[in-house]
Image 1 (cartoon, rainbow, N blue to C red):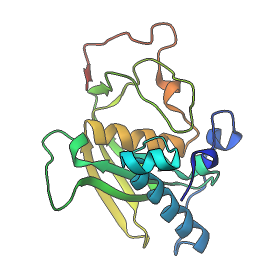
Image 2: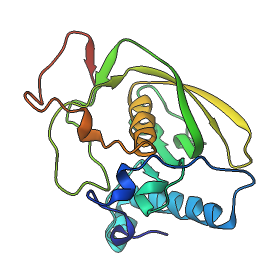
Image 3: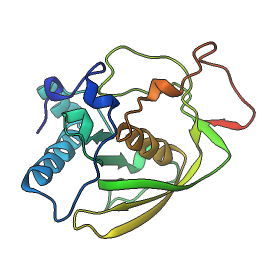
Image 4: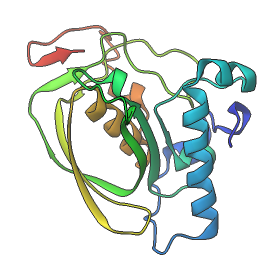
Length: 191
């Protein structure tokens, strides 16, 4: 499992690089990185465990954030974070790693998290709205290299866009209006 001191911080050039596509079958190194990233997310979302290891809670971790400039991100979105999602047998809306993801469709309607976004790689808070597409369709490959497609809206769409940005050298605060960071727009839904 990764620790906070192994998460690459803002200012490291790997966070601003275009990551390389992943080839299949996955290398042993990529399999291990994937396993360690997901373990970080699972433990970071457990209040007792994350305190024990000094982890900041996260719902996503991209390979560049652990120094690997390849196109994959592990994502762990609890059902409790998604409106109307309750399933006692499966507590997660999404749990997995997306390889070579591409956003193939996105809505004109925008959204932004009401309190702004954060990032495990950005220690200093960057206040402001991060406007993103409200609905998206993402095509990606799973661990076996099989093509997958998922349609998302609201908070899960935000998480996926944040993680996909990491694969293209973009950080969340790049989307914030520098002159008026909390400016609201009619076309945007604040969630």
